[in-house]
Image (tube, rainbow, N blue to C red):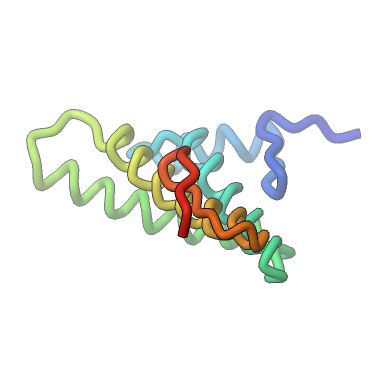
Length: 118
């Protein structure tokens, strides 16, 4: 039985891959990014999309996010880009997840954790 150091709904990484990604993506908080990507992939799966190639999709997205974070760090005096980027990604993924969660026909929309009538 394989032991995973990160085990989400879709993404499951062994220690070898997790630590390799931490070394590769120095400008990102890899744990936070994986949590967000897992939420996005779970939402995609709930919509009927394929998540069979989740590993390569994660690599591509993390590469892009890491490059943006690196450019941001070079162009500013900020010490770390990890937290602001993680907050933005978390917020975007939560909005996407909430939209899927609200397709139950109840006539209500969850916004920032609150349920509001449509």
